[in-house]
Length: 270
Image (cartoon, rainbow, N blue to C red):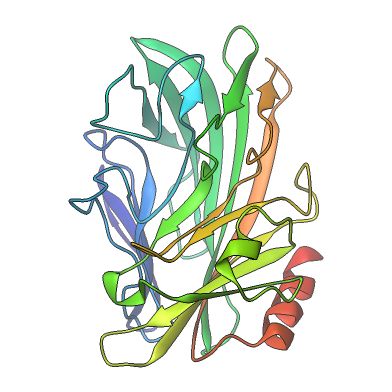
């Protein structure tokens, strides 16, 4: 693990980069980039020209009390997710942070966030992401509205565009998997060297609405999101945190439903 104070925390397996957590105050939100394949190949892109607000692996919503925490340069009122502090010094075991969702100088949401690497052996790279969200003042909603992709989303490298999908229900078509409720959903596509990489997001059974919906698309670019507000908002109350927990797993080669189910069942018991 390396920590560039005020900027980023990177996690490794030996000398192979697993992922980097970025939290600089100049950025619109904390996020992970890159998130890597088991051999250290980056699988995410950060702020591409077509969607500058796509930042690797990120958690955000488009409508929180009328403010957009997802977009950055589109029309409308925007908020920023601001890193406040680490609860303790980051270590190889992970990090725990406090973030404030701020709009027009007012904190709307207090977030306690935990991100840590998962050891699934040399054939996988993985992290666990947990966010507990609480209204800082008046009750409010996490509302996706027409932006059904809100939640924990990942933008893939361009070579993985036009990829495929597999979820825990056995679905292998983008059209059916998009919006389908599942324990996990996996996107796979080609790397520049023509190998196949796969990334799965796993919903923890403790999450509300489990198994929750996923958003997935493969053209004009590849994107996968755990989207628990795909059909209806969440309401946040002061003093009653909403806790959401996911694992994100990368593999090389065509994804195996049996392998992913084994990973899900072992992780979901934790």
